[in-house]
Image (tube, rainbow, N blue to C red; front, side, top):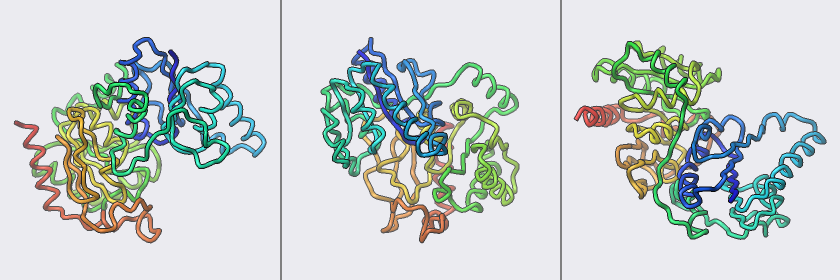
Length: 360
């Protein structure tokens, strides 16, 4: 049995397909499961013992080519899957690339969303339903329902190497207990007010007596954002921004007492590590993207907005009628007003409660 999964999306999206992978492997223990993803997201899948091969599509490289070379590269990439003779192909994203690959694969079983392109509309033997208000974990498991495969668990998993573990152990050699804060998203409209985040850091350090470790990617705009936050801080958190890989960040997170951050991949990594998450949501909806508690099987995010919980995790959001809007900030500003005026006292109370829960 050879199975191909296609997930051409972002880092967090890729991580959230791991429950599908483990259930497929449980049902087909001898199956070879290959997965095609965008470059930069593969670390969410590598070292996963249920996966045979991760196939990487370099979208930025292809986009930079001339039109003729781009077409040639796309065709070569898509046709490369046919020779593998897959028995099942599951395309987990909408769009033409995944549909083309599925069609060209000639797999007997082809699962995916209906394509609006009339040429590709009859690609699938099994069509996936719309997401509607359901959590992304649930929609990623829809192929199992379509194929009448029993869903045994909904656990999100991430893996890292012993070398990554050793690097983190060295970083933490003089730190016993800490709170992990990842204050930045690649989408800045998901970030809260810099001064508010600085107050949270100071509260954790001064009032809770817990060291704060800050992470971000090495992208300049993320490093600049972290520096702006630190300029407001009165405390001196440990700043590891830009110094760790994704897997090293995951290893670091696994040793933390609590995670505080915005709706980003690191939030999902923390939830996969069973580290309590306190996350801020604005334009995106927790019903789709809230941190998933691995010990539960039903989503706790049943409202469109406002404060919500799922097991050990808490989502802090205002109850504005416009939320979630799915927009990149208000009126094209790249700043979300709903994330700028949050109740800092309420935030502190929730963080204190979660901190105390970990002590008990």
